[in-house]
Length: 142
Image (cartoon, rainbow, N blue to C red; front, side):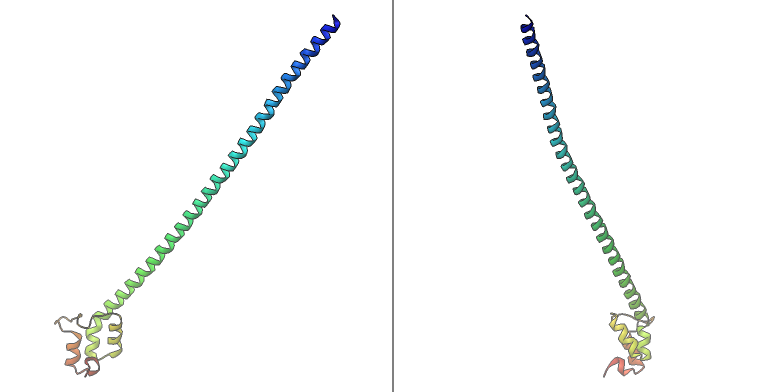
C-alpha cells in the first residue's frame, strides 16, 4: 500500500513536472516570439524614422533651393529694374545729348538699348533731327 501510494505520488509529481515544463516551454516560446516581434517593430520604427529624416532633409533642401531661386529671381528683377531705370534716364536725355553732340552719352544710351528713333522731345523731334539741326556730324554720321 505504501509502495502504491509512493508510485502514485511519483506519477502525480511527474505529471506536475511535465505540466510545469510545458508551461515553462510555452513561456519561453512566447518570450521568443515577443523578442522577434519587438526586433521587427524596432526595425520598422528605424525605417520609419530614417524615411522621415530623409523626407525632412529633402524638404529642407527643396526649401533652400526655393529660397535661393527666389533670391536669384529678386536679384534678376532688381537688375532689370535698374537697367530699365537707366534706359529710361538715357531715353529722357538721349535727345538732349544728341543735340549737344555728347557722343559718349549717346553711345551709352544706345548700348543700354535706347531706340534711336524712339525718344522724342515735346515737339516730337528725334535725337537725329536735333543732332542734324545743330550740325553734330559725329552723332549723325557722314
